[in-house]
Length: 275
Image 1 (cartoon, rainbow, N blue to C red):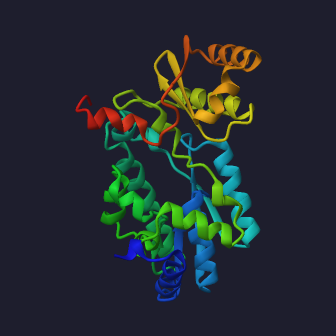
Image 2: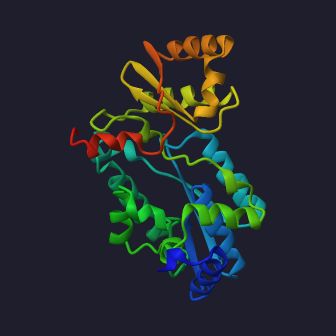
Image 3: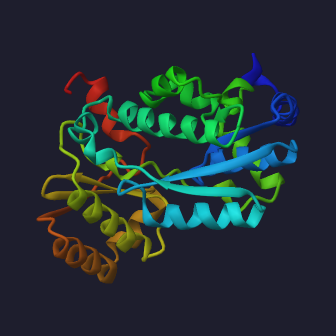
């Protein structure tokens, strides 16, 4: 099994795979996986165009980080704007929401690749993603998107380790899915709701918290942080700032989730058969 190989062997396999392409367009979010893949593509002497799709669903800091990282590597980088909220299938926020987002994105990327004479389109999906509920994978497969990290059996742990060895500042970057993931399935996604939850998370980051989610349960802001950060939130002064700040954004109730941060926590509703 490829996923059981040592990370250095996986890196060699990745380099060999990438060198089989003269060039390629990369769906580049600026996260751990796509940043590592961009570096690997450049190391393989490929002609690369990194494309970052910006919309209301993307956290503000993520946009800035993607631009600065690509610039630091000297990569050819293009920022495009997408409009997921104009697609009713996305805005109504059914469990397959991500499919509709990725379907639009990959269609746009393939058109750009054709215009730029790029022979292939890549994304940063890793081996761990194959076992999770990710409707976007169906869109990637439908558009023939290549996922070299997954093909080489690279896990998130491998990618963080290798990123650190390569000196990439993204090696310990927290995962940062789109802001639409903060809403329970069935809750309509709107521009106002996205802006509110984005500002709520910016407020929390201002306290020095790196790993967090503010889950928007209607009038309630349910905060997820790592257990080690809970005392920071509960300190009297910070607690007051959080409550006042989130109420000013329109939340009637502010709650701390005692289970702490966990990726994809809203998928529990699917697993329990409640959505």
